[in-house]
Image 1 (spheres, rainbow, N blue to C red):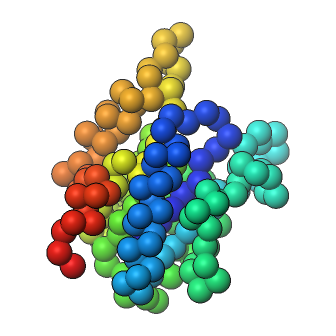
Image 2 (cartoon, rainbow, N blue to C red; image 1 turned 60 degrees about the vertical axis):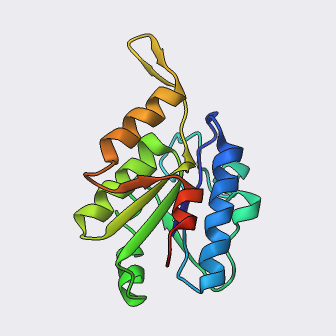
Length: 172
């Protein structure tokens, strides 16, 4: 499981998404399955979010990593780029990923596509992800439309997209 943290820009439905992620995290821990937390830290000059040692770079308080869980530090939207995530997944024999986090249109989309490219079977938990309104040519695209468009593009090609409760009801 990968849990990503959002930037300081206002996201829509973050609390609801984080609570769905809490359910998944609890399930994985009870099963003893590997959990990978990914923290985005921005170290580029002039960066205004994901700054090290700021509240915006912290995990949601109910999703904090346990000591035995891997924390991957990334500096780009792709959780694999410039990190040891792939090596850690291989060490633990992980072939299937369940992904959730923030922001759907950026880190989640990029990481899901990269994971599929590496040959992983990917499930994206749609209601454990959040995004924000986007601006394009002076037009605001509401977060709900951004979320829907990205999930529609991902589903069936790069990942299986499903709600948390539906995924949790499946037999394992």
